Image 1 (cartoon, one colour):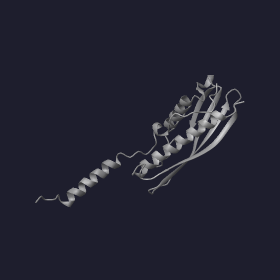
Image 2: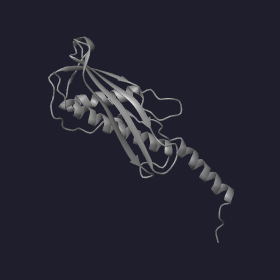
Image 3: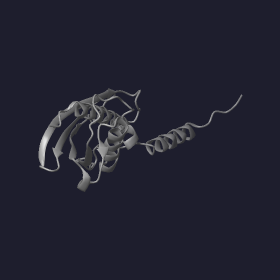
Image 4: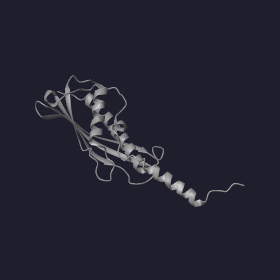
Length: 179
């Protein structure tokens, strides 16, 4: 007959595993989480654009999207789709501003729904006038199949909602009349 380890030993192993697991928590979406897979657009505009991304700075204790990662995701989607050619400000025909206006997510629970609103604004640089604007709302839902840890789940679902928003924004931009 073999002796079973004492309950304190089993409890200490469980605590160590829980602490190690908590150290692997993702609290913000990465550029990879937010960048859409390649997709087709209606029109590839023969114009140069400079990109300005605002509002991605995370607040204290909340899941948002780092500004640099958000910018990287939008740039990648523009390049991959070919909707515009990227340019420096002094050579750009248009300035595209993408503003992360709202991220709404639950604090606790097993099933999450994250809502994201982003403002897309395209202005002609020569006239400094807006020629196209859209407020795009997207959401992503999931439960423990996404991630068991609530912070990681919020980060991944935020990334998915932003990814969908970027795809929708680029798709709408491709259909926009730039005259």
